[in-house]
Structures are given as structure tokens and as C-alpha cells.
Image 1 (cartoon, rainbow, N blue to C red):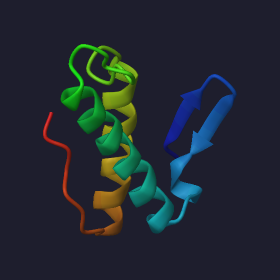
Image 2 (image 1 turned 90 degrees about the vertical axis):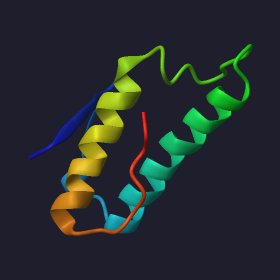
Image 3 (image 1 turned 180 degrees about the horizontal axis):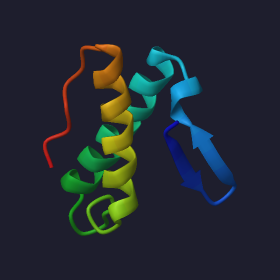
Length: 75
């Protein structure tokens, strides 16, 4: 079981739908794009906090396991 620990507990990503995982992964990409597009503000601080990368890698691993087609984040 792959669990992601959050401040409010854990999230078992294996229980989420593929569509849900794709949406979460897209949210990470959007936050990263927002940070990169606003280098002075960096509102999400994706590159500064390793949890973002760890979380997206776990989601990507599950998507790969399911054979989902998506564009991987280029860190």
C-alpha cells in the first residue's frame, strides 16, 4: 500500500481513481509552473519543499503501475 502522509493523516493513493490521480498530478504541475513563472513570489515553493517532489513521484509511480498515459513532470 502506498500512503502519503499529510498534516491531517495519510492518503492511500491506491484507493483513488486513475482520473483522481491524474488531477492531483496535474495540480502539482500547475503549482510548479506558477512558481517558475513568478520567480520573485514563488507562491507554492514547490522546488523549495521536497515533499512536493516526493508526493508527485509517488503519484507518478502509481499511474505508471496502472498504465496511465500522462506527461511526466520535468524537474
